[in-house]
Image 1 (cartoon, rainbow, N blue to C red):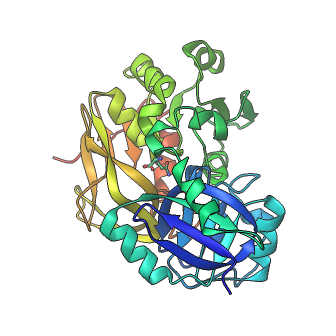
Image 2: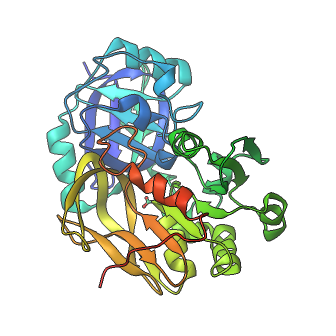
Image 3: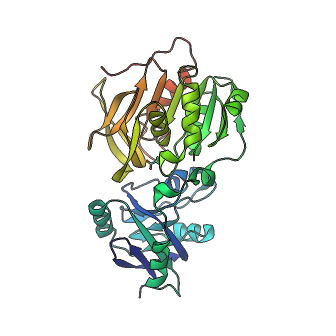
Amino acid sequence: MPDAYLALETGDVVEARTRAPGTAQGELVFTTAYTGYEESLTDPSYEAQVLTFAYPLIGNYGVREERFEDDRVHPSAVVARELTDDVADWLTAEGVPAVDHVDTRDLVLDIRDRGAMKVGIAAGPDATPEDAKAELDTCPHMSDIADIGAQVSVDEPVHYEGSGPSVALVDCGAKGSIVDSLTARDADVTVLPYDATPEDVEEVDPDVLFISNGPGDPANFEAAEGLVEEYVGTLPLAGICLGQQVIARALGGSTEKMAFGHRGVNQPVRDLRTDKVVMTTQNHGYTVADPGDLDVTQVNVNDDTPEGLDSADLDVITRQYHPEANPGPHDSLDFFDDVVDLANPDHEIATAD
Ligand SMILES: NC(=O)CC[C@H](N)C(=O)O
């Protein structure tokens, strides 16, 4: 007997089994990643989304805090073919609804056909399809969640002492492993709130300004865009995922929503300078449509969307994918060497031509 329901924007109601009770709403997205569920479920970029795992069994190697990217679960609900008790217990304790016994192959095909869509979920002994529909009816469009940055960012600056270059990391929902990747290279990292002002940056007096990943529409991160406009040409700039999108927007470019985005750990990316392909971890639903003053240096092999933007003149390097590789292949960890090297006056940025 089903005791959970997913109300889709298609009008369909999908029956499921409750693994963690509650009601939830959000944008229904899927990841094809077959490992890394702890990292994905604690990735702030998944805020306000309902995460469907395309891989059929999730949780088979337990739940360990040392693999978390943040101190809480970010998707508003979780959908799978089968979730282990470890994951179900964790999500129950976190108060995040989770359902399984769903034909996720079918659901993923729906999302691919229709594009990312809103979903309402009701799970638990008293749940009804009407409860799920009521959640769907009040679910905002992702781009309309204007304060999404406030839901995922630090409130006050946080400092990680290091002997190397100073990096101001604007926290639009930063994954912990981005901080770790910088501190592992001796960077002195100050994490600033998503709405940091130029005065906040001046207090840090960084060598590099870094805009982090984060959830939702990059258009809702105006303060970070303002920092890029303020410091381009004065400070070297770097960005990952939402950071790439914010930097492109600030430098005369634009972003747009994708049909269903890229979420997984085997997205192929071609470097236009070397013609080499690397495998990457991705989690995004928006993309840079116009790179503005930046050069496209890397593209997605599947759909040609920009994966890397650089400018030697403006001193900027960005990636759309997640080079910190938690989870995922380690092919691109050297991006962080390049970020730290931006503080070196003799650094060189190789652009595509
Ligand atoms: N991981 C991210 O930073 C995601 C960026 C943005 N929220 C998107 O969905 O495209």
